[in-house]
Length: 252
Image (cartoon, rainbow, N blue to C red; front, side):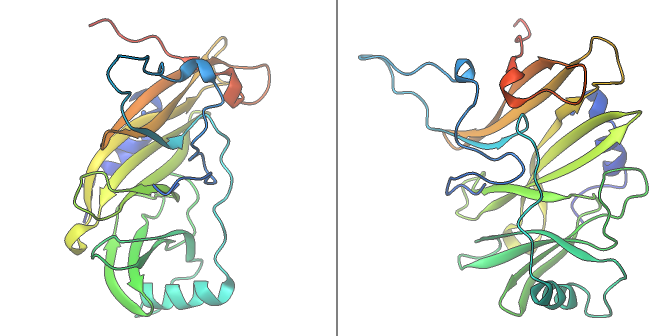
């Protein structure tokens, strides 16, 4: 299993502490265009060193939309592969991606929610990752965390295989939060490559005069990096993407 028994509690604590590499927009926040031009790094000038290769994978400033749905017939086929001893009531395929995850050949990664859990709250049912090619199962991996979407994939660790960026969302005392894990499936075992806690924190409507925080996760010269942004809470709802400005950097 990927994470220890305390992983879910750690994600709930994200409120205090917390797409494909082929480009294009992706529901759930993976975009290649920054709506806040001031946040973009300066372009390299003539005679200067070349700017680093940079690609945005997940932008938490953007509103989340539901992943592209899986047709009912395909849902039934995938769930039968995920649960050969019988499909639990309420189980759904929450998201999926195509890539090369455990071997250098086209595969499908399916994020399955055994009981249709929709938020990372205490007691939520952990997700299951299923990797298939056709009807052949290459990996069936309980994650012990109720991930909800796969907003992006990318070869993060340079092994030639696609790694998954897995998102979980929840609320704590009215504050919405999200966290992101980068997970490698090389060798048919799940291994967390990186974690971005507090990738999104929206206390709007809970704390007077509060600010929302959102991260942009990008790959820069083959390494994952985050940029943090802040926005004042509006009178109602959450800030728009254009309301965010770069967060001050800690000295040193």
